[in-house]
Amino acid sequence: MLTSQLPSRVEPYKLAARRERLEGLVALNKLPRLAEEAGDQTGDCHVVLEFGVDAQGRREIRGHLQATLALPCRRCMVPLSQDVFSDFLLGMITDETLAAELPASHEPVLVENEQLDLLTVVEDELILSLPQVVYHDETECHVSAEQLVSKTEGAADESASAKNPFAVLNALKSSGALKGKK
Image (cartoon, rainbow, N blue to C red; front, side, top):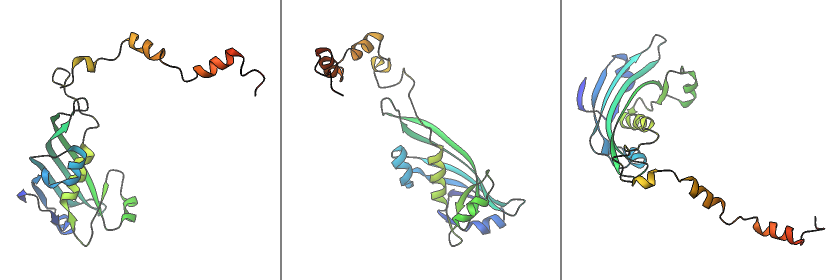
């Protein structure tokens, strides 16, 4: 089943019984938790979801998503384009206590009242797929070359010779003021 926009809610057990495939787009600006994590986004996320039942009778969703996000560079905070993608396998559960029964290959997805919020599923997978850190190439970064270079040995010596917080105790000790005190 090919749709231009992925439906926001589905009945996943019916889709799994019929081994349906949903393919479509999710507007990135409709995902508020993604915006909190990665900033405001434009464009769409391409999503493919295959509903089915495995050999053990577990209802599952095999999915793939791909999006191009504008993520801030950790050096200069200017956004840069990053392709993000994820392949995932979800096991449908009706109660959180059933999550422990899923094999390690399946991530649990909670189905409430025979309904599944696909936007939440897609948003969760996008957030989990975000890279830890994003940097421009040094030649393209908006931070100056001097700021990218580590401090030299001379700078380290300056900080070592900075005011020692124990200098007062050392002065008292050498003046004999601390003799006989314990």
